[in-house]
Length: 630
Image (cartoon, rainbow, N blue to C red):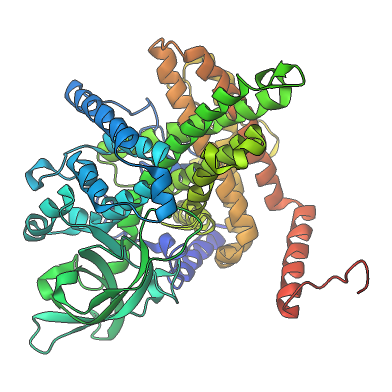
């Protein structure tokens, strides 16, 4: 590949991305605070992210955020967490009734009030604003308990604090924090996040709600409507996103999204009846309408026109709550399954003795261990001040929601007809879990987000490499040629994990290393082949994303298990077996996905799949003739 072509495809990829929204806009998202302000300046070094997720797209092993396993609670935080766990579990045993909430499609205000008294509605709010002052790791453990007991309550909790007033925590000035956080953190008032509209699902930039600045410049007048708003029927405070007219540096006026804190008490804020849903029925979901709502100018969150960034960062920051809750749900399903298979006798033997049952249970354990490992790695990095974890957070959301769905579905299967019955309780969990693959970023969009964000980062570095090659750096040219030759002849063993992975996991670590190396080569090849059109290659991008998910999962479990082995944990041998099996399975999937990127058979299959879908869409119904002919 010529250096000129590397430069050209990288610039095309970035320019093309700027015209797309959400997943594609993620490519062109704002730089982190510690990134150079002007990457284009030749006098400054190109930005190198500390994120493992970003660097695996270059075939590199960036270990700083993944090894050693970053979870660490000091004695004070560990004691605080111990004090919270007991009352929280007691609350779900004695106060909250998940079955009744589901049947009546609401959670009583009194129950929510008692939940707030536990500090659960202001978990990460600093104590000076009447919050519990927990960090993200502690919050994840609390979310686990909620997810194990009542996912509808988890949605109320998440919609309130993970996204509802999270913008005030992240972007609010001191006056805004003092005014709103104490009531919200204690549950005296509730919050909601108002982004989605009928015309804008995942495409957040296409919202139509509009905020017009008054002639005296003292307030904005908001008109529009939002749909599917969790807590929308009873929230007192809303984080609302609306189009505003912004004058750019070039003097041109453009519509850009801005974020606002809106109180129901302002007037003009109404909501529709509660939506009838498949699951999470106890949570309130409703349309919210804004009619000539006067919002003080000081209630803008962040800068004018930066609402898209505010919305994406709120979602990114709060996204770890979903896999945390899903981890709790998985644990609940696994526990019920263990109790069932160890007591249920069929054909003269306990269910636990049958091979197919053992295989299902083992797969449940793998999926739970992976998700739990990712959750606490992500939360700990956030606690340590990491600013770049967007890929890892998206992967966590995908892994958590999909693994929990699979585990619950198989738990029902192993319970047989009993699992289908309401009394068992698993059917409610399954219905509740279905939404987690959709909201806060549908998993299909999240996969594009992962693939495109990583590809943009890799493309940026390819561009820089091309510049160095053009300059005649013979040492670099020789190094790159060696690397490519090594990969081509299957001689590359990938980046070394020696010194960070426990020696007992050497074989599994080697599989992960090879996967990282081959993944980096595949991404580079993809960029070389498709250039600016890579953004439209969704068949390929999905497989890139799936490979990335498996690689990050491998590294997460390797790190966690290494920590267990170093600490001589009682469960270390059991954990090692989980990791060895998972890495074997995951590395095989990675290679299958990467092979599909270049296989002629796969390319032909993709074209056939596209043609089939296009045919039925054009026909407006199924195309094939009924076998009976009538």
